[in-house]
Every structure is written in structure tokens, then in C-alpha cells.
Amino acid sequence: MSPNSANPLLTQKNFQDFCNLPNKILSSIGCDLLNKPHSIWLSVLKKCYSIIAFLSHAYICIYITKTMFNMIVSDDFELGLLLRLISGFNYALFSILKAITFFWNIKEFMEIYQVLREIFPETRKEKLMLRVRDYFWPKWILFTVYFYIGAVTFIASSPLLEGVILYIVSVFRVGWSRAEFGYFKLYEIQYGFDHHSVFAYIITYGMELMHAHFMVTFIICSDIWVLCFTLQLCMHFDYIARELQNYEPNEKAYVKDQEFIADLVKRHQILLNIGDGLNSVFGGLLLLMLMSIAATLCCAGVYTLTQDLGREFIEYVAFLPIVIGQYFLICYYGQQLIIKSHSVADAAYNHSWYNGSKPYKKSIFIIIMRSQKEVELNALGFQPICLEAFKMVMGATYRVFALLKETMF
Image (cartoon, rainbow, N blue to C red; front, side, top):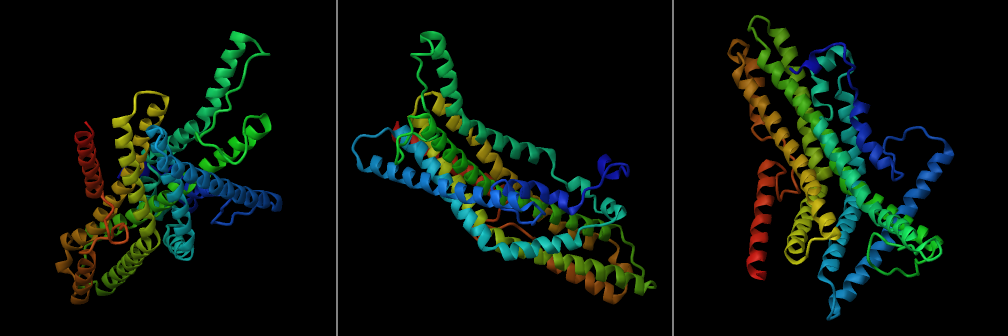
């Protein structure tokens, strides 16, 4: 037990604290799953913003697709720009697909949410027993999430910052009257109107920022909900394993043993059902994440082999560790879920079950049999999400990169 979890003076976390992070990210785009009380005006503004953000996202996706098509069918195009547009289109497409998949399974999602809420420890003593603080959003997860959001914010705002800096430099060089603003955009494409005016540029850049906000929200939000539920499942499995490991059955204390094992079997069955529900709700989302990672890494491999060092190159390549870190987080806690769920079988076998009554031994046998098949995150049956999956994806990426390098050079 860590010092934090053992210290009774520290404030214990509740179920709502676990869900605040993913819900805040989702509510920033105007979607509040937990239906927190808001004023009517704030609710209306959030709904309006979510609609405008979606329309902006759709509008920009259309023009990215149109520009890519025109570049591909033409004989003369810039490969670096095409690869950047393909990466942008990849993120935009998968954000839409993840949003559709998430809300398509919202009913099952809320059922899992309610069950986890019901079994979450309520009293301080129960929270200490389950070591809630040990499983509450480790700092390295928070760092990865906030760094991801910060990096995307910097990339989305960098064209505007570049334009402002160059304009200030131009003012000092040639004066106010001759200085010109660059009107740089997030995407090097032409929209259906001219953006080279103050008002049009504000509209254009505002649309691109909302597009980026929509895209990032739905790219990472479902993954953070997966982590939120997985952390709690690991916490409950760990509690069951520790309780079994430390329990001393006695054939003479038949009633006490039966009450103990009945409670644990009930808890265990609930957790197994939640594990099945997680794959039902998030299996498609995990598959989309896997496909998105593969597409991003392939584009990055071609980009690094064909493009010279520059601002676009640095921005593009610097974003890769963040994408890989996002996938590693899911794989790491997918691995932890496998380990914690299987630890129940180990604890059931290793404790002194032989001192219990026959019904007690039968219940232990049932727990061991049910725990043989670990609870795991699964991408619709294609790939268990664990550290081995991360290793396979990174290995496949390296082989593709080596093949491209050998073929192109």
C-alpha cells in the first residue's frame, strides 16, 4: 500500500472525481453526458457551439478532401503538403467515426457508468480498503493528456502567432503603412471565399480552431473514458484478490465463510459483466484508434524520408510521440486490466481454501474457472489491447519504415 492510500488524513476521491476529466473534455464541445445543472442560456450557448463546431469541422473536411483529390489527379503537386493534408484528413475522419460510434453506444455506456457508480465505495473506510487514491488518475496520465491538448493548441495557434510575429517585424522594418499581415491558416488550402481581409480571416481562423477542437475532443475523449472505467475495474479486481488472499476460512465457521464468499462472487460477476460491456461499447472505438495510429505512423514514415528539415517538418514529427503516447496509455492499462483480473484466480488458489467447507471450496473453484479467461480490452476481436499489441504495432511500423527507406533510396 502506498503512503498516500494509507494516510487517513488525505481527502478520499469519489466516483464523480474519476469522471470529471473525461466529462469536462467532452462538455467543452457542448456535450454533457452527466447532465450537470446549468442555466438555460449556458445550455443554449453550448448547444449552439457544438452545432457550429460540427458544421465547421464538416466544411473544412470537405475542402481538405477536394484539395487532396485535385492534387492527386494533377501531374504537379507538393508531396509534403499532400502528406500533411492526408494526416489532417485521417484525424478528421477518425474523429467523426469515433464520435458516431461513441454516441451510437451511449445507452450501453450509461449502463456501465451507472453500475460502476453503484459499486463505488461510499464510506471513508471502504475507500481506504479499496485503495481508491492509488487508482485515481496517476500523474503521468494527466501529464500525457494535458501535454497532448497543449501540443494541439500550440499547433492550431502557430499560424496566427507566426503571422503576428512577422507583422510586428515588418512594422519595425518598413513601418505601419507598408507592413502587411500574412493571413496564415492552419491548412494550406483554398476555401470557398477569400480570407485576405480582417473579418474573413477571423471567420476562417475561428472555423479552423473549432474544427481542431472538435477533432481533438473526439479523438481523445473516448480513450479517456476507457481509462476512467479501466482504472476502476483494476481497483475492484485488486480488492477482491487482496480480500481472498488474506481470508482464513474455517469449516466450523460455515455461515461466515458463505457470507464472505457470496459477496465476493457477486462482486466478481459484476466486474466480469462490466468487462464484457466495455468491449461492446469501446471495441469499435479501440479498432478505430488502432487504424488511426497505423495510418498516422505510415504517413509520418513517408514524410520523414521525403521532406527536408523545416517548420512543417518539426511540427509534424514532434506530434508523433504524443500520438504514440496516447496509444501506449491504453495498451498499458489494458495490460494492467489483464493482470488484475487474473490475480483473482491466483489469490483464490493461494489462500487457505482447503480449510473451508465443501460449498466454500466449490465457490472458490468457480471463481478460479471464471478468472481463467482474463478481462481484456479488445478491438472487436481483431487485437487485444495490451503491451504486446503496442510492441507489435511499433515493430510493424519499423519494418514498414525500413522497407520504404530501402525502396525509395
